[in-house]
Length: 363
Image 1: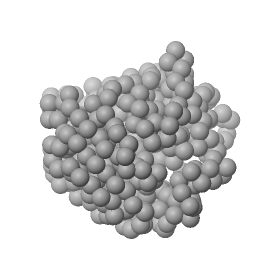
Image 2 (image 1 turned 90 degrees about the horizontal axis):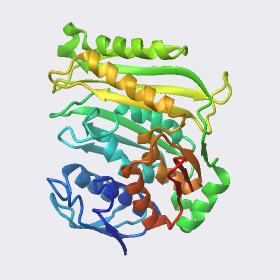
Image 3 (image 1 turned 120 degrees about the vertical axis):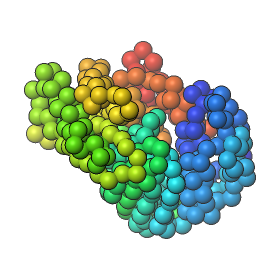
Image 4 (image 1 turned 180 degrees about the vertical axis):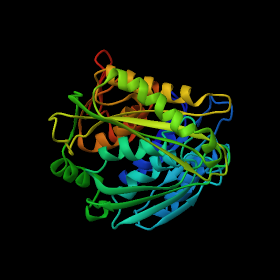
C-alpha cells in the first residue's frame, strides 16, 4: 500500500483528490495520513467525502477513515464500472474540485457516462466552471470526448449550481491486462504535451456573470466593460466578453477570461491548444469595476509571462501529462504545482523534471 503524507508541501485537499484519481486508474491502494493537518479545519471535508463516495460507485472501491474531519484515509480501488453519477454536494462545495478526483477515471471507463453534479460553480480557492470548460477541457480532449454544460450557477454559501459532464472515452482501461500496458498504448496513440511557446494571440474571450437580483445594478455588464477597457488598451486582438444573469440561491458574481493563442494565425492547433485563463469573484462591498479590473490584470500578467500555460493550469494538467509525457512552460511553478508532482510520483515513479529557473516541467 502506497503511503502518502497529506501534509506535504501545500498540504491541501488536492493531494487527496489526485491520489484518489490515480489510485483508481493504476489500481494501487493507498493510505494518506495527516490530511490537511496544518489547516484550521484539519482533516477530510465534505467535498473529499463526496469524491470517495462517488468513486465507490464508479469502481466499488473500499475505504477506511472516510469520515468528516478524519486525518487518515485508506482507499482500495477495484475495476472501473462505467455508470452515470448524480452527486449533490449540498453546499457551495466546488464542483470543479470534485471533478479532479472523478474525471480521470471516468475518461477511461468502458462506455460513455454522464456526471451530474450539484454544488458550487464559482467559489473561492477553486477554478470557476468557465475556466474548467474553456481552459482545462481543451487540453483533455485528446483522451476522450468531453462535453461540459452549465445548467445553473451556484455561489457561496448555498450553492445549488448544476453542471452536467458527458464523457465518451476513446481509450478503455478495462480493454488491457493492466495499467502499464494501457499507458504504453496511450503513449503510442496520443500526442505528448508540447506547450513551450505562446505564439500569436488570436482572441480574448470571457464570461461575466451575476445573480438575477444584481441585474438592475448592471453588475455583469460593469465587470465586463471594466475588463474589456483594460485589455483593449493592451492588445489589438478581438475581445468578446458576454454578460449573463441567473436565478441563484445566494447572491454572487464573477468573471472568467481566457486568451487564445495559435502557432499559425489562421489555424488553432487542436493537439496542443494554447489558452491562458484568469478570473475574479465579486463580494459584498467590492465594486463590479474592481472585479473586472482584477481579472483583466491577472490575465495580462499571464500573457506578459510569455508562457503558454498559466499558473493554475500547470498543476491541473500534470496527472494527464504523466500518462503521455511532454513538456510545458508555465508562468509560475507554484507550491500547489510542486505538491501535485509529489502526489503523482507516489503512483507513477519519478517521472517529472522541473527547471525552476525557466519554469519548465518535463515528463
